[in-house]
Image 1 (cartoon, rainbow, N blue to C red):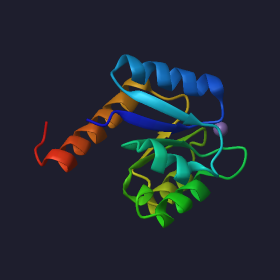
Image 2 (cartoon, rainbow, N blue to C red):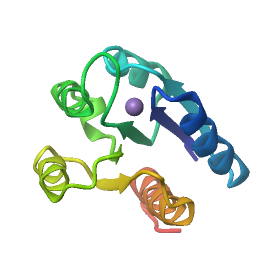
Image 3 (spheres, protein in one colour):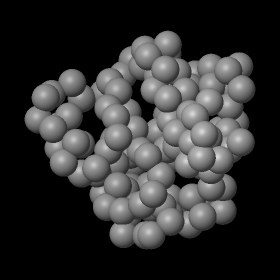
Image 4 (cartoon, helix red, strand yellow):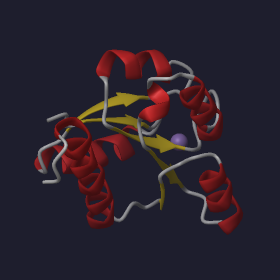
Length: 132
Ligand code: MN
């Protein structure tokens, strides 16, 4: 089973908090600090899920999402937005851009784990044809 989660997050402490928590719960993680190389890294690492910070130093998470959707392989991977912005407009924009979920910082770790687990279950379903 694929346990790899890509966390696109420029803040090292935020990444470490997410990565340590997910590792304790059986997942493996990779980290990118910027958005521009996401598609090529997705091809290399093949994550089943992407946690995508919206506020990145080079391009916005929404622009990263555009890049992911333009590529046939990366377009199939669910993406959860992680953002410091709590405005409803941004959440609606994320929905319209094809994000599969939306989490505000500080991240509620148990809620995040529930979301991740639900997508990990889908991964099993997609690859073996049976639900866990
Ligand atoms: Mn950021």
